[in-house]
Length: 225
Image (cartoon, rainbow, N blue to C red; front, side, top):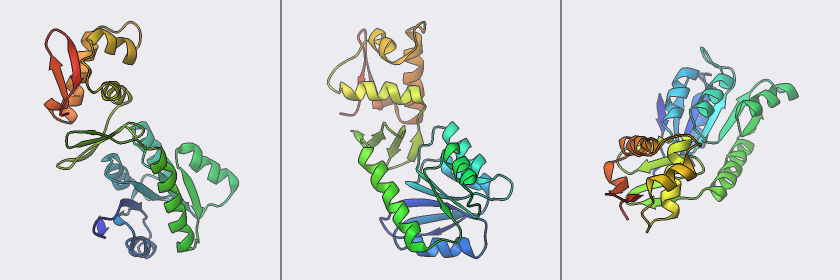
């Protein structure tokens, strides 16, 4: 793994196995992004799962695990980071396969670096415009992407249920919500109120205990106000 760092720049993951093209792309994009370069699909998946990146540039043909498998695995893991797929396969069917797998955009090799940069800027505009950020103490919660970010520990990916629970509490920051109400609004019919306690525990384990406050005999409210 190598990094091309621009202080304060958005973090970008580049997954490219070509020993000449990979470093070249990293150098060019390093003018605008903090680029992490990995050279195979398994390493790309591991890095992408961390949720530490705003964008992913992913080659389709990779050793071991190809780009289609990587983006599918990222989406199954709940990682919503925008992905631009690079490939030498330019047929319509190949582009459709990449987009259906979960990629947000598709660029055929050889490409112009100006176009690559423009497409990445467009992806950031689209996803950034739709992204709500909820501040909970020092934590940043991004409900649309199910990401929660700490200045100390980096980003973590929440499950859909965890994100829905935290979103509900964030929508009522000054209220204590009963376990019964949380159960009714977040969980499927038939679940017990004990399920609420379980998911509060899950959220605290991924973040810290004070992110949700227990109000004895009443329920839960958003913590760290």
